[in-house]
Image (tube, rainbow, N blue to C red):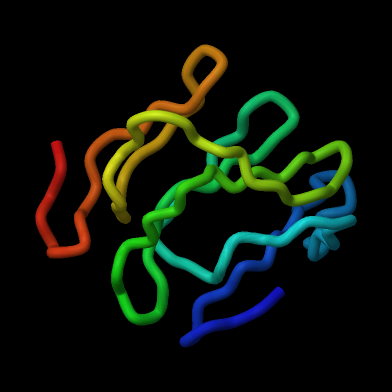
Length: 114
């Protein structure tokens, strides 16, 4: 894991049977940059990371969705084609069908989306 301005990009797993936390060690790929106010959505056997902001507070305008494969324990970026949402933080996100649905949030200028 790394830290930038106090923000982290580490991933932790809680085992109910052991009642213990364990830091997840990636088997490869690059984890998303440290961030806050992002979304993390479970989708099939993956965790999808979208948006958020960094320690300088601008919203991250990622051109890809960051994906952690729970079986392979690897990070990857899924390229996004065509139109995509504006950079945002403090939004809501849920799995929907075979994809991810996001709503609202705050733009880099502090404006709210709805």
